[in-house]
Length: 191
Image (cartoon, rainbow, N blue to C red; front, side, top):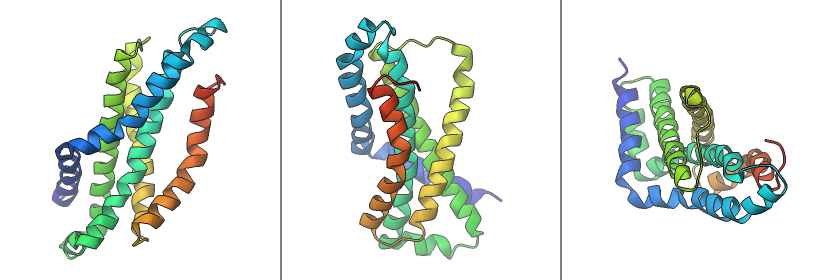
């Protein structure tokens, strides 16, 4: 019954792992934030008596990574429309909600994988897990956030035909969400 959902989910996962440049490129911003802000502002944060800045910084960086990866997963719909794969998918004898669900689950899974990679890299920067028992609930929360934003990205991409327009609209939507993360960990405000 859910063969189409699984197939489209698997397609998104395979596309992600086959594109090494996409993996490396999408890790650029989180690594830059970890290094520049973590080590650049870390001593100032410690002098103010607030502890380790990396501990404060990592959850926001993981959240931003998941946010950007999941919401921009919708661009694959526009690519598929331009190359004809979307037509082939839509004429398949499956309900359209299964097509949307498969793509959404695929985009969310890729975003969570991206978040897990950033989480693993944060240990190299000095992050220490304070309570390992909260890790399963954190993974569930990461997946739910990724699912929400992947669905939003796909819904908007299904209405557009232009990649540049999609990027503009997504940036317009993401920036108000991005600023609270950025201001909280860049300027030492409360999370």
